Each structure stands twice: as structure tokens, then as C-alpha cells.
Length: 327
Ligand SMILES: [Fe+2]
Image (tube, rainbow, N blue to C red; front, side, top):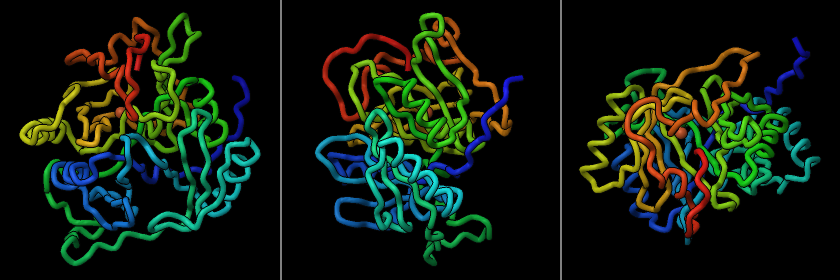
């Protein structure tokens, strides 16, 4: 067996994702009233929200902007020392943007860009969420009452970013952030890397890079929120349909990740996935699963084929038709 590099454990988990929206009021309605997330803070053009099971104060930052897309993707470090180590490594790699005093509920943070240009940051200090009296749970280990409002998503799960060069970004996530590669899609007898799914945790993937068929940079494919079972995904389809929300794909089951999914567009235009059922990975020597064209198929294990928009549409939107590859 080949000697393995000592794994990095400097990143603990995905902390939060900032989404830009040109329709802030309608996007807030979607996340608060339909998905059941709780707004906890407002600052300038941004509203901060959380799922009832998120133990961080906030896991979604919704920011009014001219165009839809992804803002800052925040990762929590495993310690103050880990934060310093990663900041130095990212700075040495020429990707650093510098330190800030931290966003709402957090201590000092280090910002950087991935090779494709997406903005990210790492922080360690975090304010523990203290529920107001109206949101106290009678269950001591639940940070906030299960309100049952709308879909009532439990927590943030992952996000998928588009990248012009998947391989370069996958290597960055493995080597500089220490993420474990879980699955890949490779075409052309393995030569072309179409997508890579990675994680710093036991969660199957917290970050995916998928090829941008339009050759753009810094775009979002989707942001994913977790519910506990398939019934909740089916119920989400009913609730969102009743409220005129576009359902792009699902409920169906992916082959890669085994996830049971529903893809919708929030009113601002970003693709949001309601997700459950994927498996956990605890093995330190996990061998990535690679899918070729034939094995990957349409990306579904069963259920309706993913529509062409799943490959072509991302935020911010770029007009025109890209060369068809996987996603
Ligand atoms: Fe996903």
C-alpha cells in the first residue's frame, strides 16, 4: 500500500453560505415561510437565517444584490491554531484576500479565493446560538424549537460550485483545505474530470465542484438543505408547488451520493436542493468512487432524468448554450 500523506484536520465543517438575490423580499419569504428557516439578524442588505437543528447561530446569509449567485462560503476551523495554519497556507499559495474581524456571530476570519474565483473564508470563534423564549425547545439538546413551519429544514448540508477547471479546484480543496475526495465523475477514459464531491466531515459531501459548461467562473450550481427523511422531501414538493415555486427536478434518487433530492429555484433565481438519504463516510482511507459516462448516465439512480437546465443553468446566469457534459 502506498504511503499516505498525514491527513489535515484543520477544517471542521461548512459554516454558512451567502446567497445573492435580486429579489430579497421574495427570497426571504421562500427561506423563512416556505422552507421554515429562522431569521436571526439583519445588517444592511443581508438577512441571516438558520435551520432549527443548526447549532451555529446562522448558516445562510441572504444578501440583496443585482444578480443571483454565491457570495462568501464560510468554513469553521477546528481550532484557533488550525485557522492560523490554513491562513498561512492559503496566503503562501497566493489565494489570500486577508483578515477581517468576522461576520455576524463570529470572531476574526481569513478570506481567500478558490482557484476558480469563488470567495471563501475560515473562522474559528463562533457565538453559540441562544434561542429567544419564543423558540426555546423542550428538548434540551435541540438548539431551537422544531416549529413545523413549511418544509422546516433541519440544517445546511452542502453546496455545489461550478468551475472551469474542476481538477485544479478539487486539488486545492484536498491539498489546502484537507477535504477528503468521496466521488468523482470522469469522462474520456478518465481524462476529463467532470465533477468531484468532497468533505471535511463524515457528511458525504459538503463541497462539490462541477464543470461549468459555459466556461465561466465563480458560479453556483446549488445550495442544499437537509431534511430527515424522504417524506419531508415529498412534502416539500407539495408545499413549494402550492406556492408557485419552480420544481426543476425530483423528487428522485441520485446514483452518486445516493441522495434523495428535490431541486427548486428560489425566487431570486438560485437553485436550492432539499436533500436527504445520502450516506456517511468515516473511513480515513476511503477510496474515491469514480463514475464514467456510462455508469454516471443521467446522474439519477431512478426517477425522472435530470433536465437540460440542470447542466445549462447556474447563477449568475450566463446566456447561451454550453457544450453538454455532466453535472
Ligand atoms: Fe446536492
